[in-house]
Length: 127
Length: 127
DNA sequence: GTAAGTACCAACAGAAGTGTAAGTATGGAA
DNA sequence: TTCCATACTTACACTTCTGTTGGTACTTAC
Image 1 (cartoon, rainbow over the protein chains, first blue to last red):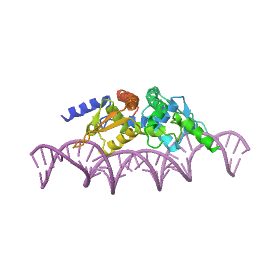
Image 2: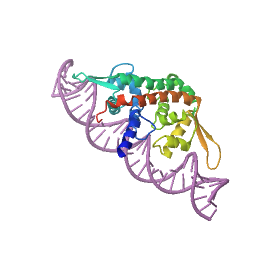
Image 3: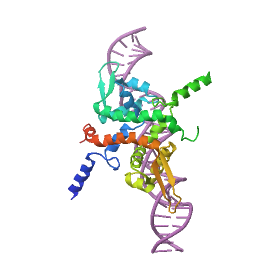
């Protein structure tokens, strides 16, 4: 009985259900929509970048956060890290095919926000 | 001189630039991609819901967080709150046209995650 | 010998996010 | 009279997030 329940639950989550509290898909969502994750995907969608380049393009990220964000995205198979084993260090980051698919969706939202910011801002109190 | 700079900056941000540290678009992104904001948009895209209905559908939200999230989305003009002034209270929430546009993008990402969860999970260490 | 250059990591502290529990309001039902 | 229903709000505590600072590694240039 217990086994059947477990299997059923597992089966249910096989595809992912963001409305379910314990579904691992929520972690993916967390990485992809994190404060810096979104911006990293957008920039990387534009091509391979080094760590320092990403930092320059994304206004306000600290080294610590950029590194952490990149690791999260790497864990989900969105970003590929390539270490050229040079001195001084030379590492670059690019999107995997999976990452490119995700970036497409994320960018779509981001573009929409940028374009529609005036419409959105109209609803704000202090203008 | 000072004035010119200010105008230029304002002009620059008129359209929204998520890569700029101080652009207000980052707040919108924050609301739309917040932990619960995403899920609220997805559920509301399916139709008008009362507070309690949202809470039941979205696994794990506390009342506090749901209320806060809804207020954030209302501030950005994504969600319309209707109070029927009944006792016991009867309030419902629906997406505005703006909200529906945003929800479309957010849902697109969410759907992609749910469908591709197996592909993503393959990259995780403990399976 | 020492500074520069690059990509980090660790430790600490303050800020922000989040959950829990309790309380508010009001009319109607039991 | 007491309890219920619903949509919140507030206070408190705890966890997570985030920035800052300082440090590592190693080679080349000065």
